[in-house]
Structure formats: structure tokens, C-alpha cells
Length: 378
Ligand code: GLY
Image (tube, rainbow, N blue to C red):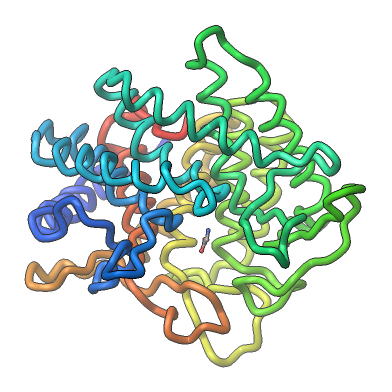
């Protein structure tokens, strides 16, 4: 069990974060920040309403609504969810990240308010996600690029909770969704997780035979390196697979990747954006820390008593560093700094990404805010 001191720290941290988010909410309203210092999706004529990050802001608004009961947050979340209907209407724009997008908007809405329209949207999108399953290789196809028609990425472990949710809320509980979630998780276990607990970001399968044909260039330094946000997606994704599908092998996978992640942390520093990159330049990623913290909290909840302290210590170490990387200046529209997008795209290094803010708020809410009663992902 987290100590009283840890919970008090999380409570105080949550208050700082919530205060900042309340200020951001009045300025951002029903828009979709990507980096909170001014990049938006959609923006201008080339608006991309289908962008993978467009569920995080409504997700934060739902977390704030749970915490405060303030109707402003619900209104903003609903406004964003309505706008996302434009993405549903554009089939070619839809990809596997419908899981991130509609779990945090429509599933959250349905869980909190029981809104049937939100349930229906989420079921539609879960069905789209299920339709991306390739039975020749037992994986969910990630994107729609011609060059990656047989491609899957580790991030998708965060999308499959939409499937396990849909099993429960389809008209009669429909196990096909979970069969697909299980088949995909098993494939990730087999082909993405390396023996030492590090993970590949991308795997390309032959779309007709299902054989692994390539490990393409990725968001980390190189295919064989170790992109830390990808490790975090695996930690949290497998922890949720265990909670939602109930097989110990998924918990073991989450623990294995977690042990590798924890072993690569430097004291009082954010995780490097890639644990196996050259010494210079030094790139950190706060969003990897925040997402990993969420997964580690879930692992700590379910392991036996004497296993808990290691995960809890890691969570607290990450939270202290995250606190140091928060911008509490009320004049600036930025919360968590020093997130990183992709290693070889230097314009995306050390930015305040909305997904970092989201997982930070979620981690604090898991730890303190609602005493674990509400989990968007399961
Ligand atoms: N899912 C894309 C990323 O983590 O950057």
C-alpha cells in the first residue's frame, strides 16, 4: 500500500495540476491541443480531426469532472466528443488509435453519465477497430499507409481496452471483441517483447501469410533500440490486458517490461526518450514517465503484498520527477514539459504534449483523486 506520506504528496500534486488544468480549460475550451503551447488538431484548412491525440483533452475534462463535479468540464468534453463525429464520417481517416480517441471521450462519457449516444459511438468505433484485425497474422493493423499494410505497433496495446469494453456493452455480450483483443495481445507478446523486457515499436507482417518480415524504423533511435514511450505503452497495455482478459501471462509481460523500464531509470531524472540511443544528444520524455506510472500503479494494485513496494517506489520516483517538470505559471498554457515525439524529428523534442498531461492527471487520480473507483480503460 502506498504510504500516507505518498498519498499526501499525490493529493497536493493533484491540487497543483488541477488548478493549472482549470485555467487551461477556460482558454482551450472545446479545442484539441496537441502540444499545449499552441499546436492544435484540427487547425486551419488541413484540419485533422482524426489525429490520434484528439481524445486526451476530453479525457482530461472527464477526469476533472469526476474530481470537481464542475459542469464546465462536462460541457467541454461533450463539445469535443460531438466534434469527433466528423472523424467517424471519414472512414479513410480512421486508424487503430480510435481506441485512445473514443475510450477517453465516449466510453468515459458513457461510464460517467450513461449517455446512450456515447455508448453507440464507442461501439461503432470498437467495431471499426475489430475490423482492422488481420486473421492471417492475428494482429490489428495500425495505420492506413500503403507501405505498412501489414503493420502493427506496440501502442495498440492501449487501444484494445475499447474492444474488451465493447464485449460487455454490445447488445448481447459479444465475445468476438475479446477474442480479437486476446489474439492481438498474444501476437504482441510473441513478436514485440524481447527476451530482456525491451520492446519493438513496429513490426511488419506479411499481410497474407502473417510472417514477420521487418522491424521498420520507428519513433525511437533505431528499430533495435528501446523507445521509452513504447515501453510505457507495453507496461500499461499489458497491465490492462491482464485486468480485462484475466490471463496471468499478460501480468507477467507487464511486469517484465516494467522491470526493464525501472532498471533504465536514472535517479531523479525523467526517462530518456530512448534507453538505447547514443549518449548525445540527451532527449527525455515526460510522457513515457506519466504513462508508465499509470501502468505501474495498476501492477502494484494486483501483485501480492511483498511485491508491491518496488512498483510503488518507482511510481513515487516518477511522480516526483514529473512534478519538477510541471509548469505551474498561470500565464502560460503549458502543464507537463519535456515530452518527446520522435527521436529523429528534432522539432518534437522537449515539448508539452497533451498525452503527457492526460496520463499525469490519470496517474494522480488513480492514486488519490477517486481512490481507484474509476478507471477509463477497464
Ligand atoms: N502513438 C504515438 C505515440 O506514442 O507517439
